[in-house]
Length: 160
Image (cartoon, rainbow, N blue to C red; front, top):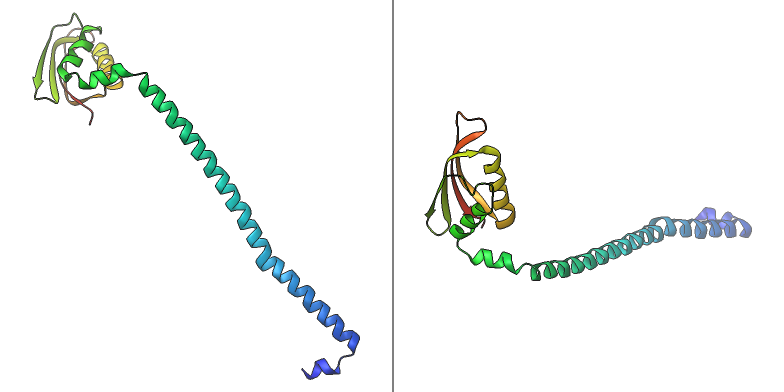
């Protein structure tokens, strides 16, 4: 501090002004600007989350409306698995194919085809899964001498 007293009043004022200016610059650079940037980011995050929340509310309303339009799907869930499979076979390209349908408890059904077109079988299985949420639990396919024909044993169950 000796040096301070040896300085002239004008030099002391310049140093004080420099210290004030340096303090203001440091305050802005180290405190004010980071806080301002953080506030802007948080404001953007809040707006994004509000938009997402609004979208979710609209999607929930759409889902409820779609569920109200699908009473038939609910009725099929209450229908026995055997009945759903039998009905789907009758309305598919497999209706005239020789087959054996056998229930395996309440949750599984076995369907045996002695000769079926592979593409028709796969199409039917895909429709069962997409329309009725029925999955394949076991599938055994043997190729036959006829072009595109297979012998198939399929065990089906409802998706959990």
